[in-house]
Length: 598
Image 1 (cartoon, rainbow, N blue to C red):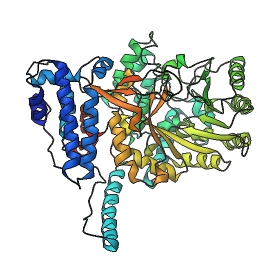
Image 2: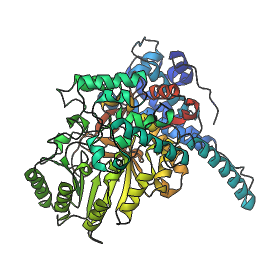
Image 3: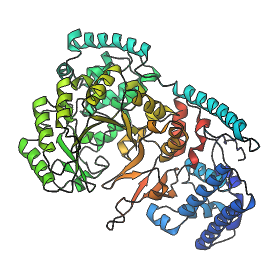
Image 4: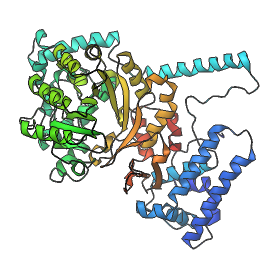
């Protein structure tokens, strides 16, 4: 594939050069529909010629031509114009005829530039695993050459992963032992309090500006915390999780901080829309999938049960944090009557074979109430799996005592009822020996532990998620889902283009052994649920907006069961994302193939 240097900026002239042949073909045409037919024909002809000219064309080029041609054809369709409420074809036609388009921004030119280069099998960037063994070698000689290349490849992978520290390193363990003492001193606790989960709950930090006295903070962090306090947004950090933050700001704890310290943009949006929960807060449209209070049902054989509507720690990007009044809010637990009504409703629907008890965080409840709820759920005759959704292994691992583990083990009925814990670990720096101990405690009772990773900006650097998978497997946690960040307006600072997760899966995750990359990449759709990103049949790029945002049409999983509308969703611009990476010190030339994932 011909190497193409990245332009210093993306503009009209850069696009004109990349798409010269296409613009020449449509510049003399006045009628938009004739121009559309001509451009579609050129794309098709170019694609056919690419496959016909050379018998041994470099595979990467073939894929690039195929994917860019498919995407270009999709975004110039009349149907796409209507669905996206913007016409890429009209914009290209105007550019070809030199009609001014002041609405088009650099992000748009960047997308079009890469698409038209890719259509010709050109464009910047190579993947970490792209190397070529000479076709003249064979047998042992070829195997040895391949092995040498694989050694070089893994050496580079290890170098990339080594940038991300984890909590099982001896130096980090020792540092955090000292941090623990500091946190206890700051909060008035003694050494004996640390293993007492009730002490941690009593000392959850609920006042945002209290952090000013506990760790060093940047100006932007202080601004976000101050605004959150003024807006009276729910806020909470456990003492244990505070000990995972470095006393002085260092890059290694950036993800830990970002999970709980809200940016100003988030606070301002939340405060401005607090009286309008139907904006983007309820992004998953749970109001349309709640057949009875406390129950959400999107799929045939599984439901969500939410008896407790709060947590000891509030995650900024949580899909339900807008419903929470405060961390550990009094009155957040539903009444026994409401809980039993919900469980009875589930019993009355024997097609349901799995219940996910979540919230809020159910493991923040006292044992008596927690055990009662889980026992009642476990009695449902049709149940095959009881799943508990909790962040407690991350935010308060000492809560999972021997008593809790033993109780969960007793709920399990071999060959009849599986009991699983699904947690949410974002970064290797959150993994600790304490977490390992509780995972071991659960696994000794045959309780499987899975992880769901939300792929936010703060965990999206090269091989950052891969490093997490490796360390999770070391402590016995199975990677389960990687969720592309939801399209919520208030969390735009956390969002990552879908193309980046696709790139991560293809260029980073796939280089790990199969048992380390068991997670499925998904994007959650309002009311419809999970759209599996691994298969392109589940979505189409239908437009690129003037700011460079891709517009996707996501196809519902139940499209063959009943009439169901597809979901039209707008992504964040790739160019904006790359520039954010650059600001945190990343070499964005290492990400250039991102443009060719759709």
